Image (cartoon, rainbow, N blue to C red; front, side, top):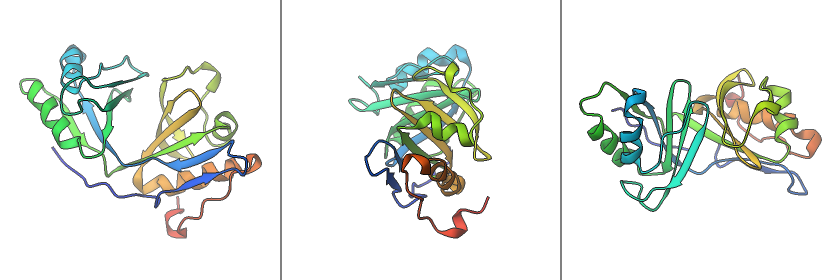
Length: 202
């Protein structure tokens, strides 16, 4: 399995409207594993991780009662024909070893994406902002829906939460996406993202 170290793609970006009603920030470091596995192994993998694998287009999260992530929160997003496993930073290797052990006799694909992906968290004004740079029909979505789409001409996974949306993009495109999100939120008071110019080139 390929492992990547995590470095902040945006230097800890943290933007907020003056009244705090809208925020855009870079999420803290997380372990991010991409898993492709036959549906017949979903229960076994869920037991190894300590959280159930969700249905396609949905997210599930729980405080793992066992396994490498025991007593910490694990989230699993079913997107793009596979799963994205999110856990506390530093657990990727242990989780991967546990999953690989369970799937030793089953063809599967497991990659540590912790250093290759960035997570942006948009709170407040989600509909207003995403409508300007994303074609997803928000009215059809429920909390914990997961959608693979384009955001600012960039492939992205959107995880809808109660009052926020987590936007997962390739780390090399994170600054470009963040700048467009900030620009789309200017009418709501969100300041411009002060990012290096060379990172904003599409």
